[in-house]
Amino acid sequence: MSFEPKIVGFLCNWCSYRGADLAGTARMKCAPNVRTIRVMCSGRVEPTFILKAFQLGADGVLVLGCHPGDCHYAEGNYKVARRMPLLKKMLAQLGVEDERVRLDWVSASEGDRFVSIIDDMTEKVRALGPFSKNSGEEKHG
Amino acid sequence: MAKLNLAIYWSASCGGCDVAILDINEKILQVAEIADIVFWPIALDFKRHHVEAMEDKSIDVCLFNGAVRTSEQEEMAELLRAKSKAMVAFGSCAHLGGIPGLSNFTNRAETFERAFIEAQSCDNPDKTLPQTMTKVAEGELELPEFYDTVKALDQVVDVEYYIPGCPPTVPIISQVVDALAAGQLPPVGTVFGSDKALCDECPRTKEEKKITKIYRPHEIIPDPEKCLLEQGIICMGPATRGGCEARCIAANMPCRGCFGPPPGVTDQGAHMLSALASILDVTEDEDIARMIDEIPDPAGTFYRFGLPTAMMNRRRM
Image 1 (cartoon, rainbow over the protein chains, first blue to last red):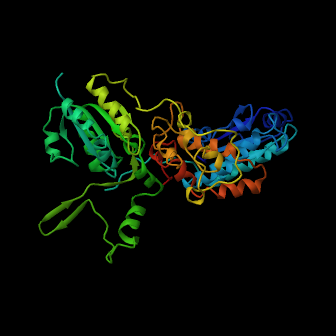
Image 2 (image 1 turned 45 degrees about the horizontal axis):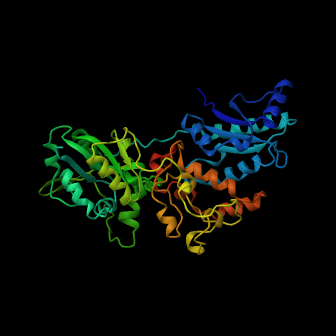
Image 3 (image 1 turned 135 degrees about the vertical axis):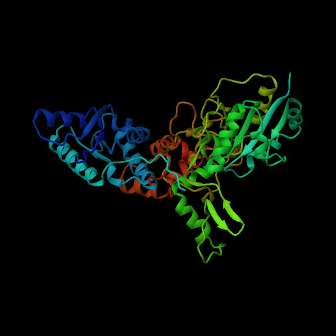
């Protein structure tokens, strides 16, 4: 059976989740690989959530928020914009490929952009293959 | 009250924890009053077979320091667990994985390569590496197996109590000795320390946290009164359990996180990362990138004492 990546998507309530809704009501087609979790703000997404998603079997994690300047809470998306590159730098040290974690911006009117981000990320994670967290149980003789 | 049987053991550790026990000075006499030390390899001449000969659960308390990385350390942890009523993870290495846990950024092969071939002080033209079995004229020589991954004590055996710190502080060790003397041990699972983050007991002045440059400790002489984070120095206080009386802070050095995460925090590194990123006072991508460049080793900084017990406990292999 071919590998179907499991991607956890954290979508902000005010822009990106509505963008996803728009894609749905407009009957746009997109890859079915993203499991959506609605959060009030992309700034609510703690790095722990992303680690936990991987721990529970995700192959990739996507965080979508309002475009810079558009945050419903003024600066929540700037917080995540600072956390994500630092988290990615840290994850690289732990051997996690860059494409497995993505932060992007989707507004409520950008259903088409939502679809293209989902499709693009799904293909990139598919190309990387499953994320297997090595728990360190291995032994050598 | 009958005297307690006390065992003290070390595995992947530096010996600092054993020294910390002696740092309690004259209180060591109280230890001798309440307990017979039945095993303490660094100080007394007991061997493994002495422990093997003991009845199960005949040791009342075993203070186990050091992480677990070899088969020998794993066997000793299991042996002492079987012989002890209460197993205590003593110090950061047993509690969280500690400094040896940073080895989880590499693996056995890379560690051997570095230690036995690359190291400047090494003269090893035949590139000999440690083997678990070596045949010599006199017979077979055996060495413990060296694992790819370092573990904390409770990832190997059940643990009743945790004494944090690198090394544990004298007041905390004294508190444990007093609890033992009174026969009043806290509920299983207790970590001897504060239930709040270090910032709660830090005496420095704290104002609004917004920084535009990150300094490494050697790059700046910090103001001794002001919050170190507000001065751009990465201080692990917000993500670290208190109880150490902010000793490093008092020496004008930032907290490095040896007490591990406070209650309610699952992942110390992710928590610190989040706290630090939130106070960077920049919004443009290039400014964010510049500040992140000022943090050369985020994983090693945020998980300095706790990589083996982090959610992602090693580099993927």
